[in-house]
Length: 67
Image (spheres, rainbow, N blue to C red):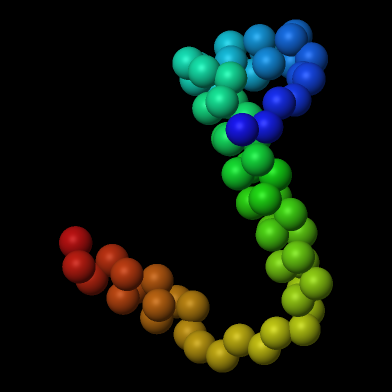
C-alpha cells in the first residue's frame, strides 16, 4: 500500500465530474487516462512518415456490406 497526499478539492471535483464512487477509482482512472494520452503523443512521431496503400472508398463500402 502506498500513501499519497492529494488535494481534497481536486479529488472531490474528480469524483463529481466522473461519477465514480471512490478515491481509488478516480486515481486509477486518472493514471489510465494519463498513460493513454502519453501513448497518443508517441504516435504523433509517425505523422507524415508512414505510407498507406489502399482504396478508402472501397473499405468504407466493405464495412457497410454486413448490414
